[in-house]
Image 1 (cartoon, rainbow, N blue to C red):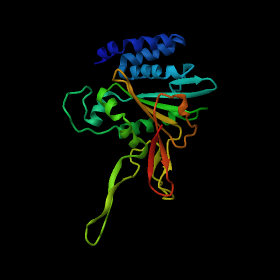
Image 2: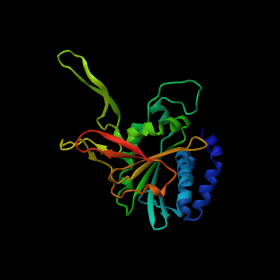
Image 3: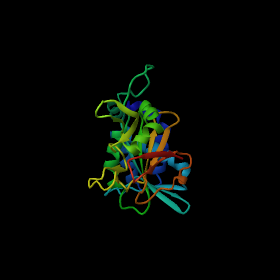
Length: 264
């Protein structure tokens, strides 16, 4: 698969190498090592830069080769923002969803990528911290079916609210249901919220260093891309900087547990 990926994404690889040639040689050598040792991750990084390029006056590397940090700094007129890229490898997506990477022509049940994405947010929060502007996290995959099915808006709403559960009221004397069932969440797998351990509120904010997440399915010819935004990030991201991408936003109800997602 690695050889096939390098052939399939040859144009993206060459374009990324040409871009890296504009910076110190150590950056190109580092990316070439990644391409050799972890081609999926290197290709996702190259595709991410390609995705951002039309929306940025300039993109430069932001990672400190000694200390780490986000991958890119994107400048647009008077604004700038950072981007950290991470890869959901095909085998990880297959294990999480039960989906094969390529369609089989048969229908099947599958799980979403809420927990896999949640774990990426936890691991990358520190890498997005202590910056002078907003930082987006790109979660990309070359897994065709995972990107097409699990990066749609319906699935990504659970990345904001956590896994949904059905609940209902029951008459404790008769055991009969009262009214219609409704959906609730315990915020399990929510990227930016968590339960309040002190029970003063239905939730508290989490991972404020990540201004938003772009979910990018680079396994298809036309990448499937949708984003979610942190409701109160340390440095909020202006979604107008990426006008072709839809972002889901939480409408918070602090008086109760109701969480609504709206898309722009």
